[in-house]
Amino acid sequence: MNKSLFLLTLVYASVATTQLKAGEIADAPNGIAFPADYMSWQVISTSSRTDNETLRAILGNDIAVKAARSGQINPWPNGAMLGKVVWKQTSDKHWPAAIVPKKFVHVEFMLKHAVNYQSTGGWGYARWVGQDLKVYGKSPDFANECYGCHKPVKDQDYVFTRPAPMFNGSKK
Amino acid sequence: MNKSLFLLTLVYASVATTQLKAGEIADAPNGIAFPADYMSWQVISTSSRTDNETLRAILGNDIAVKAARSGQINPWPNGAMLGKVVWKQTSDKHWPAAIVPKKFVHVEFMLKHAVNYQSTGGWGYARWVGQDLKVYGKSPDFANECYGCHKPVKDQDYVFTRPAPMFNGSKK
Image (tube, rainbow over all chains, first blue to last red; front, side, top):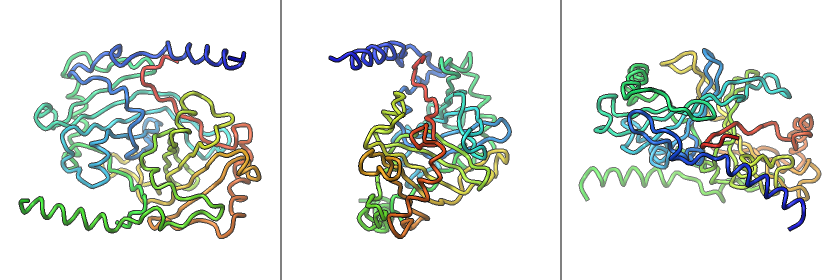
């Protein structure tokens, strides 16, 4: 092993040991576990909130992505999980008219199960805040705040996000 | 097969036959083939352009995502491919302060190879426009337009996008 490779290995090992395992991140008060693989989920849409100057990427697990891309989203199927990654925004220093992510704010999820989460419209909610992924909410009642905000989109199965068109050659 | 399942199968078959295969989409004039699997790539960042009212999702192939998440992006490794999906934006009808994707504008790519694309800064460029994915550019020279615009970010290996922080438990 040459010196550069040795140093690189040390750096990598150092980074690796600072990773929390999924089990070290607290479950949401309604029992939803942090889906540590959300970074590998596919994109469903994106948004920008002018009221709080944030950018968002909306991702989905395999069930959600399949449903989104085949239009089976009213209702979404049980097991579909949507993840929304939220960043505070800033202007790109090389292209000031471009708004880009800056600080990670939180990542929040909706997990569909018509029976398990019947009291909150068929969706279980969860949110982890900041780079330490501190769980949001102190008791299962926290989800009533989420549900209350989502009630105006009951006709969209309580989901604000509409899947953005993504073409892979479909003429649909 | 019951009637509902039969009808569903018919609908699915109808959708499936309107798919173009990757080979039916013209290559870019510099020889880059349309990466028909880009919809399955993972997210690297997102952005909003106030100068032309568009939202963008920046995705990466496996090589690009690995590089982005380990900070090995100056230079990006050969084989890294970045995809930017661009949508015209609109206000969400249920949350007017939220800007969301409307019409698909185009999807564009940067493919890194320091030698093959040496004349355009080590990146091959490609763009497909509209839902018919019409190839952009008439001759290989089209990439000079892209390259010219990217020259101000030479110190970022010609890439505007900075990977957005995505936490899966890393305390880094």
